[in-house]
Image 1: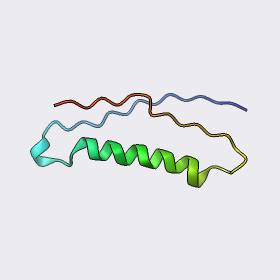
Image 2: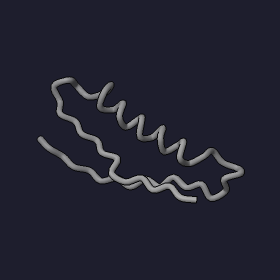
Image 3: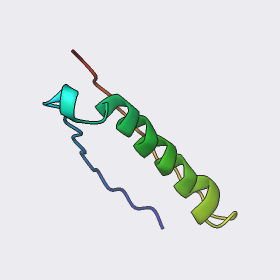
Image 4: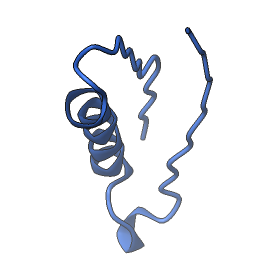
Length: 58
């Protein structure tokens, strides 16, 4: 059975001198999403997770 879920996540770094770089945090999130497919889904399941848009600016 197919299912679809949309999720919007905002990682904001409004005070860069007092925070962890938000781009580094975003990369960790995307890496963790990939591990859901490789480590937590059953081999016979078809699982697709897409990080469709990443916007980082100064």
